[in-house]
Length: 299
Image (cartoon, rainbow, N blue to C red):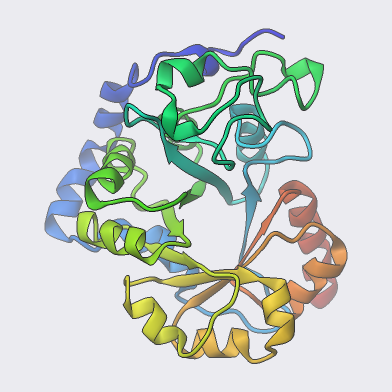
């Protein structure tokens, strides 16, 4: 296949343009340090009622139409009515944030080995698309910067899962890019690791943080206070086992996200719960399904 211009462009080639676009935000941010979190955090300002669902997030892009965590998959979400893309961020051995779920590149590329052991130059040479379909042969492993470059003019938002444990210096690599591309008000940064979220809070307190946890034990408010989270992303399995889970999280003043729901049965459960966001491998299909059901319910 022909490689699109945004797949082959050098990293930071358009940073100056993005800096000009976001320059106005710098002035506003200087006046109000919390303004950066207004857009993304506002997704949780008005908690939903049963029969309402907030936003849809494309899990690693739109996997129904393109290989996961690639620019074509993210472009499908950008071109749809879906509000959020969701992706996984890891650092290469030379400190470049790239988008890949697995610790090793073996499953989704023609390479082998851990992401953290490879330089960006090495990862950039991998084919991340032929495993999915021949039409995607030559698709690259994208950087976070390449995704932000696509998202910036689109108005879409992002959920960025930082994989593993990050320190404050490492998290600043991500938050600096969000600043450069004017995306700090359109990003939720998530992690399973509380130390990572604390480091993120220390590095950039204005960036909204989301705890990912398969189960939520005890008082969610205590858990969120550990890192200043605005929401908890959890599994439908846990919510089924604990019917009070959504209420407990909401009573703590937190938003609720559910992952990864891929069929109408689980979408109906999310709709009944009125959660604040659903993460799915089939974002366009879910968005269409929700629109149809909202019309039926008159919401």
